[in-house]
Image (cartoon, rainbow, N blue to C red):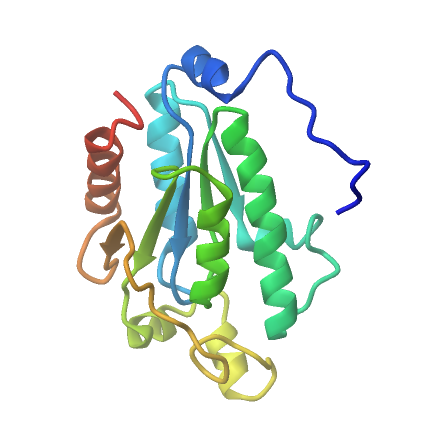
Length: 198
């Protein structure tokens, strides 16, 4: 980085924003195969948090590729850059005092660890959607597995591109066994137990 670029500290900081919001800020990072339920569970949790009066924002894998990451493909290098951009964006939102929910396959442990390193201890909550790939492929909500099996999509996670299972996620949920409501309850309990929300 250019040595002439310095960080300018402002009077209103993260802790003041958190106090104003009435809760701590964090990144809730949902990771798992396509079809595992990342967007569904993240959306349901955000709805519940919003109803409880908490300040949130949901960054969804498909949505950011319409703008912020619209120039990226799905090679390993592009996936890494996709997560780097999302991680930096989420970091800014944590500084803004928000509970940030992210729904990304994010197949590589190094990428997830990189995002974790951007924020303070306790501000990154890795949630592994531990849903069997057979279940995900059976659901196939976007028809992507079918296209990948037919060779129409390259670099598809779980088919011809690897997924590295999280080593030490804060939470694991299996949407083949738990209902949406049960997943949300488990997540809310974690947030309360760890004093993110009251």
